[in-house]
Image (cartoon, rainbow, N blue to C red; front, side):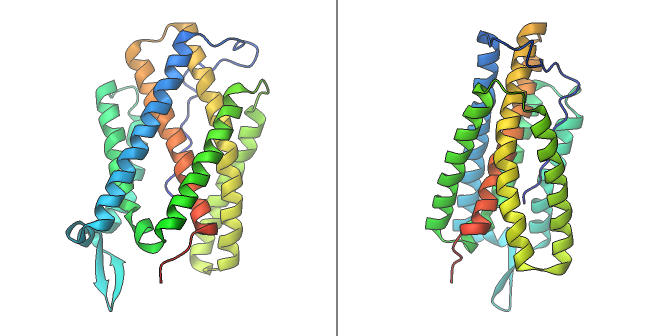
Length: 254
């Protein structure tokens, strides 16, 4: 699982289901910005993943060959864990960073994440990567629409999913030492369910944040910064859903 951080939006206005009966122009524009930046980030990640996976000179930065087997280099490990630092910096530096700086950090984060995921194109066949990506996109799209349009308050559902996410992360840490393929398979199934549900929940939360922006008259700069954090949240939902599907159904290269 790629790094996942449930951004804390508790410091920002999130209208409840009784307050958020109608979505105005500002709220719709906010959601459009969220999805636009999410798609931009996915495009950047895909570009860098493909570039590094198909360019031997760049690939050598990430991996070294030991007895005919590719192993992560020191720089490879740095790049692998660097996205966690970017996520933390964007979240904890929200109030101090300008909208432009936060946007640049988000794009750098997407690029480094793409580089760290270049191994996906080396380990799995192209057809399985494309198939799982398409499946993840379809599932994400359906759940995002459901989260945006449903009248049901998903707050309780979100709490359950968050607990499931924490439990799954603990199980993954334990399985690092156990190395159980069966446990890994179960974790992937749970992961698909968790990130599918989180897509709907996070979309509803972001919709209500957009309505809160309109309700309070939040500044354009803060609105853009909230859109970037929202895009990061949905980006992680999609990315982890894709990786879980790939672990379940992806065909490995010979």
